[in-house]
Length: 329
Picture 1 (cartoon, rainbow, N blue to C red):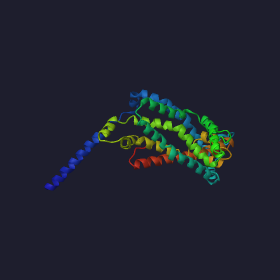
Picture 2: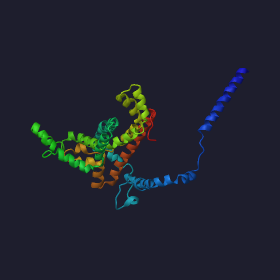
Picture 3: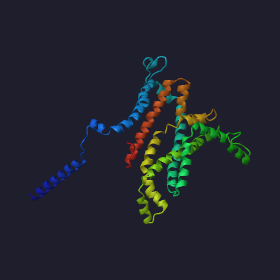
Picture 4: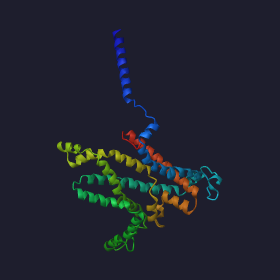
């Protein structure tokens, strides 16, 4: 009998704790209309952004239906014949698919391996600089190339690497007696694209990580110094963990854009001699869709890219959460 009373008492205590926990977790729901009226200024501020995405992003997605049609501008959406998966099938079995996939992934993986860590490294190094004026000067110099158009970047590259009059080739010729076909050689194309990306975009990524570092509590560094930790130990045990969430989010977005190498840069640097390693999905869509007028086929290629990118983002986000990190949603 006494054991039964003890068991019942324990059960009552557990039920009481559960009720208290539920009462603490319960948050009274505010009606949506009342919430909007209370924070109407915030909703008014995000309204232009919502309108922009609605008009220029979501409504045009209705045009994806032409990927399943033999679309003709003269017949329009409604009169063009429906062909199902024809364009997707032709794309996958075509001779260009594996070449495009190889070139796109090669450039993307090079960017992921060599470009992606550069902003993190620059932010960590610049965070250790104590001289404020020097820090601001370096930050500005590294960030300014982000605002330079790829047209200008390509022009600078041609000026430096031109086989006849390029400054770098003149230096190479002075030492070796011959020039190097940087612009036409297939083996140099991906390296040039990588160097351009590092030079142009490292500053932008660095600013993102420096903004994340600005929120680190300085008392953590003081406590680490008291415990005898050096700068390298502070960087490894305090600074890096502080920006780990930002690094993961940027990595998820980067993995999601593996098939997006950028159209403008590749188009400006490609030529007939390096086309076999320069042609990627973005330039292929332009050449087939705009130049040749195959609108349905190019839409199918673009749709394939979008679906793969969405899957990559969701997969990387799921993996990050499985590893105990916060994802993008």
